[in-house]
Amino acid sequence: MDRNQLLEQALALGEEGDWLGAAELLRDHLEDFAQDAGVLCWLGVAEQELGMGGVAYERFKHALSLGSDDPYVLATAGNGIAYFDDPEAENTLRTAALIAPDLPVTRLMYGTYLAREGFTDQAIEELTAARELDPDDPQIAYELGVAWALAGDHDQATDALADAVRLDPEDGWTRIVFGLELLEADRFEEGAGELISGARIREDDVDAQLAAALAAAAMGRDEIAYEMLERARLRAAEPDLAAVTTVEDQLEAGHESSRSMLEDDLSPEILRSRLRERP
Image (cartoon, rainbow, N blue to C red; front, side, top):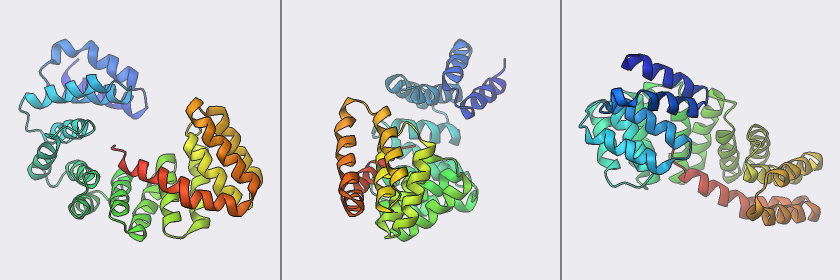
């Protein structure tokens, strides 16, 4: 198998969510491509998706040590090491964006990094440029929404996140963040609807189920509220059970108590955490 065939097959497996298959395929051929930065990057991505963070980090560092000037390699590996707060990430991602300013992925990854590091004005510039290059990419729209949210502009954030949902309506994570941002923008009914939709997609997301339960209760949709609560209870690990009980108490206390807990406590906490998540 030549390099391009290998990467195409690995990419196809990754797009199907079969990261284990992608990792095994790449490892099977690693001896032939041990000094190929692109292969190392893709293997790092697969291993990171499988929760093998330390191994993935070493793959990305190895790829960068080979001195590649491929902007895809720099963007991918730079984003990979940024996940581990490596100080070399900024220079790597900036270099990728400077080498290939017309590639959406380089502007996307650099802008994403800048947003999480608190440089929101620069992040918005990079992500706006990425969006102009590829207006149909839902990840770019999502990350632009995140940057606006981190900058404190909830109206701009909801506009960008609405586009991300439109472009990929089955992305439950995006719908949940969109719903939480709508709450911040005082658009409660819309936000509640998005939280419920997102929770239905992300069935194993306990925090999403709890937020949706409170949102439904606040809207007087008690049947949905208790459905979401039970979904959370079924999937909750031991540390989450106290939160499930607390939400149940609020549901029993009534609609106003549910809305108060969602708006004042749970929603800001979940939103703050999810905005900091790196892709």
